[in-house]
Length: 449
Ligand SMILES: Cc1ncc(COP(=O)(O)O)c(C=O)c1O
Image (cartoon, rainbow, N blue to C red; front, side, top):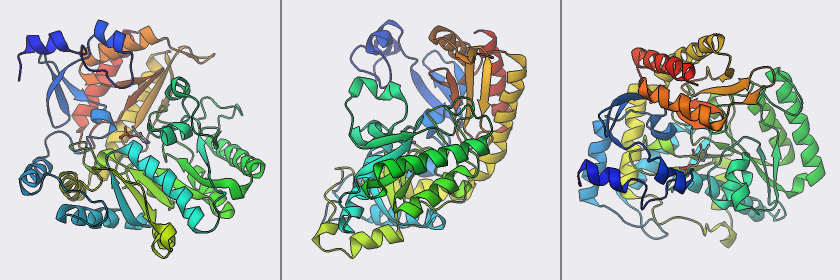
């Protein structure tokens, strides 16, 4: 490894970073993270902070899980790669498919298709949803419904069902046939409805209206995150997802739960769907499936969906997949990560620590007028929406957001900024005192706005 001077001199010079302006990264070089332990990260200057981002909503086991590291290292020597395209498989992939199926059995998931990440998993679900209807003799079911504020990755399919315009406008025109319903976001919505239960009813009515307008026979699937993550941690009312499930059922529309963030314990349950008592038809997963230690994702199908493919004639063949689908090293990471997730029962910590973080942020709302809304309380996903005028809900400007971020970091916590939201998704193994440190750092950050 080159020395620190080399790293500083070449930081963001040759590499474009996701989700930002390359020129700005050159002018204000990104923080170089050099090491991590437990839930704490360390930068190139030796500054240590609690990682309230969990890498990127993914390092559920924290940074020190040697079982997963050892499994990855061992597999690199046993078989570093072999293709899983039709005709060949590998031992760790077979084992991982069993483990993932078991993990989501209670959600009604029966088959898994491995991918390299969340966007790939979403893409797989969208494509297989269309194929499912085609096999069933309804090739006209090609459209997709989704929610505003939803995030479903950056492939053209996922971006098309995405509900945040900053991920869309530069890349338009996106895929035709994608229609968006209002988000279950009581702080801002077109109905001016602050009661989450009533808002859920309004969105259900809007969905019925859209289905009638489009024609149910033209819609393949509805995709939603059980709790919207990147959109700012938007927690729907408990009736919302069951309502959507019932509408999908009534109209023959597949429900895809995008569990890329909410899967594997983040909500305090093993899946976001289970958190709301819903069984989807398909699930997209990634992140916590390997705790971010190796890039893996998965698309999952219910028994009923799988049946349609498996019993079909030639139309059931899946002409979709990735070079790294069922990668043996990734698969070894999956099996061990799930074993560790269950052994540590990470969901049991996510519930109370998530509540501590949420309640601490609610207390900060009383102290700082710039805190317009605090969302969370369902596991370790917390969002704080900052405003310059609470009554008018005016979003706080970007420079102030950057100041809050910097001061929070300097005071001991890494948080994530998205628009005028602060978003937090720390490792599920975070301790009570580390959550307290995040809250103290946020206090300092908000004071610096
Ligand atoms: C709900 C959801 N879906 C899909 C994705 C895309 O995953 P990836 O970045 O691994 O492609 C993300 C990423 O944050 C996500 O939060």
